[in-house]
Amino acid sequence: MAQKKVAVLGTGIIGAPVARNLRAEFAVSVWNRTPAKAAELATTDGVVAHATPAEAVAGADVVVTVLKDGPAVREVMEAAAPALAPGTVWIQLSTVGADAVGDLVDLAARHGLVLYDAPVQGTKQPAENGQLVVLAAGPAAGRDRAQAVFDAIGSRTVWVSQEPGAASRLKLALNSYVFALTHGAAESLALAEGLGVDPALVVDVIAGGPLDSPFFRAKAAAMLAGAYDPSFSVANAAKDARLVVAAAGAAGVPVDVTAAGLRRFERAAAAGHGAKDMAASRLAPDAAA
Image (cartoon, rainbow, N blue to C red; front, side):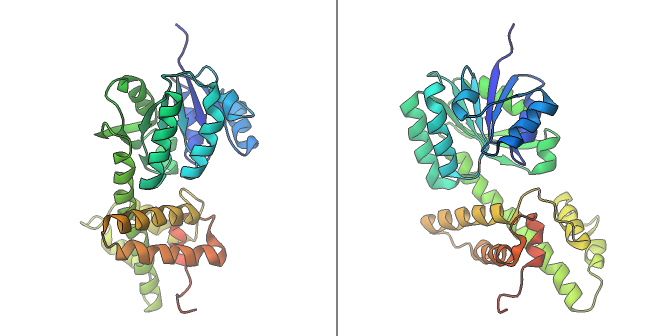
């Protein structure tokens, strides 16, 4: 029996390992706005790279989008849609926020696509290890096709709703927590250093206790070592923090911590750290500077 074909549109930090992990179960085609990134996967991982989104999705049973934001997803899928058959499953992994999902639902309806709103929890290493947590929302009918993809890229799928959009809203709530943890670690280490205490002692005291977590350990280690290879960049964190603040404002929910954290990410980006991992919150200059 011929393998089902999955097209992955977007092969960045998350999209590339997603495509690699799908290769074990599916025939995989890819497209990326920067062609060299897609070509590298074709050279090393046995996927087929294409020059346009439409070429990549031709004949696909499932399309996976892993792109920067809602407008980018909409633009790429509009380009791909003429090559898609009605009934094709569209799995939307990108973090696009609450408002953009409506446009994507409309796009899917116009072209007869079965949309699964499925942002993921996890960054570079979980993606590489096939350990993403998939937050999924979409119709019950046909879920088996989506679930086969989720099983290949993740350790767990949390079905949130049958209505696309609910998973993206949950992702915003989770991102608010992630950003609080990141900035909390950055400020704690900076404060220890500013008060003349070895910041490594902060990690030593927290280790093994109720405040410890693998996320804290990873971000604190990066901050202490000054090693900011991106798992999730400051620029992308700022983009997602804006989505949280906008959605919270529309819902009438105060998110003072996320709003302050957004300003911190923006200061870090303005200081030249936008491409670094979001742990570079540690490098944000004083707001008064």
